[in-house]
Image (cartoon, rainbow, N blue to C red; front, top):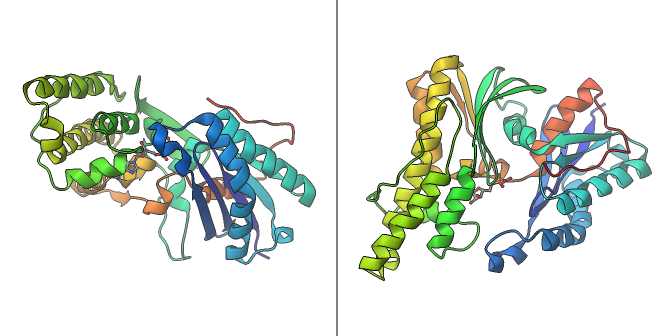
Length: 335
Ligand code: KG4
């Protein structure tokens, strides 16, 4: 008899629910995005948790309906425990705990970053290929930039990480300077396609596999400030070239460290994860690195790059199959 897990993700500003079976096939993956933050240019935590409260029940109902699964057929409920916004996480955690108690089934806590890294195991069909361990993962989301050696689903070694800002944060900040809507990543990507990388920004050079994006962020700000002094219309007249230059600077930084780690570890499978992996230049250049080093390359479908419950579900299924359940007394953690 098949086993089914209901997964819930509510770590930031997306309320998502998914149903995953024990072949890791995603039967449904429903996400309600919150538009309420757009006018503020960033996520407002209090508004996010209130929106999660409104969204969670309909999202779960639609996920079960689309998967054609009755709640009585569920074997367990998996949920994102952290890291993320505490108020947002608490909505998902409390919902999962109470629903599981009502159904008398176990709960499974999932780390949000592990879920991004294991998103490659979400299957849409039984034939779909998944990575073999170990693989080297470049995790680039709004709040995190990490190079991870994934030895097993429960054995991940962080080889490098950002010591200050994340890549996504840097792109979003640049987009804000350009007066683009939040989140800026997709707008920078779209505009960059029509531009040339004419501007050179100063990049940070730190040793090892760690990243630093604060220098690049400052350089973007100061370079544009100086250019605006010469021509107050500089941004509106050169929007595409600026976007293209920002995108190139971030992608160059991301991939130079990743390539170094790949050369040193000699791992033959590479994977991209996190919201910024939706970026078209990053996807293209990541594929090229894979070809250069003769690696198997895994790049997630767009729907599994940003926050989604399907990735939480596969993490949950790995844990379910090991009998690794959480205690009902457990609560969310922000960091
Ligand atoms: O993984 P995610 O949802 O955030 C966290 O969980 O932290 O990723 C969101 C980030 C934002 O910074 C957004 O601007 C960026 O992913 N992003 C992109 C693109 N689509 C989303 N960045 C560059 N190019 C894109 N196409």
